[in-house]
Image 1 (cartoon, helix red, strand yellow):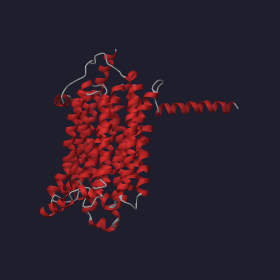
Image 2: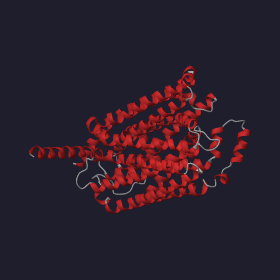
Image 3: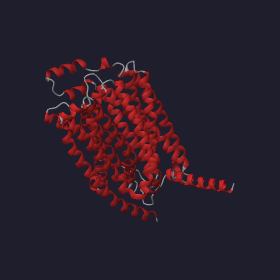
Length: 504
């Protein structure tokens, strides 16, 4: 009996200690963390559904291909992102944070509903198919990817909305709010948990999308899209209610106002904010990290999606593969966030944690490009393996996609958001908007410009033969990214020391 009574307290102490490692939440913080977690889950849930649909409806459309995606990211979304930052900066000067939040979510919801229940069901009436065919004949088969973007403008609109949701709703609205109510000491404890909420959203959304894809597998894909957009609408309503409740019940005791913080709201222009970013080596290095991350992931994804369309040309099969991929991405990212991310950050520090991402993405991406290069430049291997080689490349590319996004969510997002906390109010709001939105879009646009430039220069319609050249760009980008993380770490220690002095 004594041994049993001794074992129970020991096991309870071990369990309590382990839970404290995973959930290092103190008394009085539970309400705050729960609301921030739930808000993060909802925003990520909507994003996961949108991301799961945007590629499928565009790439698998008639006379479309994965090569149209760089056109959209490089020449459509990037200019729109500049306009979004200008508008966000202007509205931030004129409106309260809560008003800006509500208005932005409702605007996105209106566009998504317009696409799902009006434009997509009547695609044949609103899409310029005849004019696109005429352009194709007139150009003699050139500029097919540009014509495809024109042909399927409604899918392009949905693609743009889905991409901007992740940048605006998640990176700007949500993380600006979180950074406003948290100290850097708090971030080291529970940012991993907040990141994990997005991983749970991936786990939940993956089977949901898969279920409706299978349910309507023998019907028009529009029914799958409409069913999932209904969940997007429910999610947006829940986001608005959760944010309202958070502002009402939690926000006052969470605000940490520095002794030296200005009492008036800042009214600086975007141009001055960009000058602030350009003149700050610290923000400049954050920008390099954000650009490099977007470029590294997307430069691999562009080629991989080309193989994915070749292996799964039907929308149902394409969506099914993506849904399963998102599910496993969520599982692995959640495990990394809960069991490794926080512990690695506390044990090895910000620098080593931040440098994990460029190392892993660089290694996996290099292996993928080597497989692709071998497929296109080693006919003997292609003849030996046969048609299954494309499927093998798709599977390995899927593994790269899972690993790249998992470590991005678990390590990169957390360390990047932490880097903003010790900055002044102007850098947190306007500098963050410029770096996160424009920097991330510049990374994706940069990869798109490289891909489109190579397609035009080498007169090819596929990105698959470009693997060798793209490998060189990937390695250079990741080396620069790795060095920038080291530079930020040195400056971060100085800013933390200055903040500690101000608190005293």
